[in-house]
Structures are given as structure tokens and as C-alpha cells.
Image 1 (cartoon, rainbow, N blue to C red):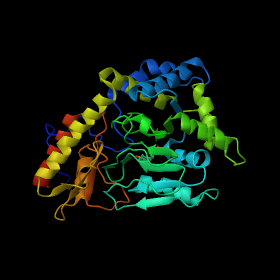
Image 2 (cartoon, rainbow, N blue to C red):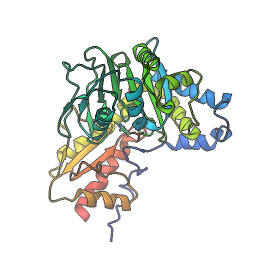
Image 3 (cartoon, rainbow, N blue to C red):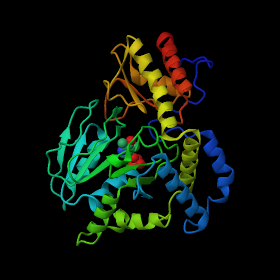
Image 4 (tube, rainbow, N blue to C red):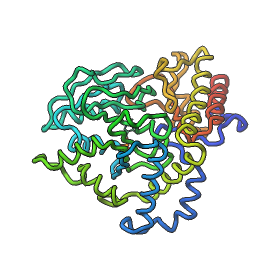
Length: 366
Ligand SMILES: *Cc1c(COP(=O)(O)O)cnc(C)c1O
């Protein structure tokens, strides 16, 4: 029989996924409240276009976007954005820092593209961080801000000439960023941004928009759904090429309004940092647990905790799940004796403390 964690120890909300992740009740209530009048209406008309505009303005304020930067969006999530980038951003060759599953996927997609030269790739073992090699000849420099598969946070800096294209999927809305250091910062809303999956969004610099327009005017064949030029043109009209998930846009707009009302990106990043201090402090104080990632690369939004051999982390995750605490399993391909904890801004820091108490109880009582 599964041990039952005493209810006074349990977190108020048991969702600790790294994506999809916890969505705040207030956002879901507003979707079922005022949102019901927008759901099921045309994405070519004012109410949904207004919603897209709210998302664009919200992101521009959250990041205090420099003059000329635009918020572009489309369907298909961050995974689709890799293919769109290969069509519309990489001119001849990309350079990648690979330090986990997600940063590896963009590099692999670039390697397979028949119209591009083989990418320059710097790869390090899981848990570490790699930036592209500055001496490589490349016109796109790519890495992930937060590698969700390992819980490692990378620095953001300018490298060489060319466009800096950063995967911010699990960092956007939870980690500080100076947008002037990136040309494209792309992400999806199901992580820090407290919404559902299916969309990609990108903060784009004038240089990125110029590259997109130039590649669009060449002979290169670009499928319409992967064309960033088409996405830029639609985004300027608060639209997407094809039908977006309106509920996803609504929840995203609500999350942005919440963050901005509470103090913006500083507020959101501080909340995640508080959760992270609780989780890593707990793991460091115990004999059977160690944070997987060494400082200074420990992620404030996705925490990975290794367990020593005498504890089976998979069985801890299963017992937590049976107690309503879900999605603490590690990234499936990492294969470590580990728990992974999503600590996005929607998660209450007190719930992370309660999660630690619940694991302590299971270690003593199972
Ligand atoms: C979740 C994630 C992705 C994939 O996002 P999708 O919207 O599912 O395509 C890509 N990169 C990183 C860093 C992620 O965390």
C-alpha cells in the first residue's frame, strides 16, 4: 500500500511539472469568467486580435524591449520554431552550445537541413553549460537560456557577428534578461508563463527582422507555415497564419497582467529564486540528496536533485504521485536517480517547502 503523507504536510497545489506546468487558479477562473465571451470567436476579429495585442504589449513591458524590437508569434511551440529558424534565420551556418536534450534538438535540426553547412557544435555532459565557440564561422549563435532537461542555466552574452538566437522556453517570465544581448529570444507559454502549450513567441531585434526579410527575398524555398516573414507580417496585424488556441492566449495574457501588476520580471524571478533557495538548501542539508547542477549554473526555475543509491528516486516520484504531487519525475532520457521540480513563478514558494517536507516524511515512513 502506498504510504499516505499527512495532509498537513502536503503542498496546497501538487503540480510541480517542468512543462506543462502549474496554471494559477485565478487565470483559469478568468478564462471561465470573462474569457468565455472570447472563446469560440473569430481570430480575425477585434476581441481575439485585442488579446494578441495584450500579449504583445505585456511581453514588451515585461522585458522593457528596446526600440525596434517586435513580439512575433505563431503556432507550433518552440519545437516548430527550430524548423522556422532553419528556414528563415540561419543564412549558411549556425553555431550551437549543446548541454542537454533541448539545446541538442536545435543543433540536430540544423545538421539535417540540406541547404545549410554543418553546424559548429560545442557539447558538454548533462549538468554543465556550453556556449557556442566564438571562433566558429557562423551567422546564428544558438543555445538555451535554461536547459529544462538538466536544470542548468546559461549566461547570455553577445558572441561574434551574426544573430544571437536563444531558446528561452523555460526561462521566459522567470529569469532576468537584458534583451539587447539577444536578437531572437523564443519561448512557449506552458512553463513560467502559466498557460498552455501550442504557441511560440519570439522577441526579435531589428537585425533579426532584417535577416528574415532578406532570406525571404532569396530563391530559398520556405514552406509558408515555417516562414518567419509570414509570422512577422501576421503578428504586426495581431494575427497568426492559421487559427491559434484562444484559451492559451487568454491564460498567457492573464499571467502577464499578474506579473506586471506584482512588479514585473523582478517579482517573478524573485519568486522562483525563493523556491529554488528552499529546494537546494534542503537538498544540500541532507545526506541522501545533492543538487545535480553545480553553482553558478543551478537553475532557479527547474531544480534537479540527485538521490544516493540507497534511495530509489523513481519510487519516491511514484509515491508522491499517489499522494497528488505530480510530475517530479526526471527528464525521461537523462536516466539519473533524480527528481526534477518545476519552480516557475506560478508555484508558491511555500509549496516547494511543503514538497521537501513531504519527501522527508516518505524517506522516514516508507
Ligand atoms: C519545453 C521546451 C521546449 C519545447 O517546447 P514545445 O513548446 O513543447 O515545443 C524547447 N526548449 C526548451 C528549453 C524547453 O524547455
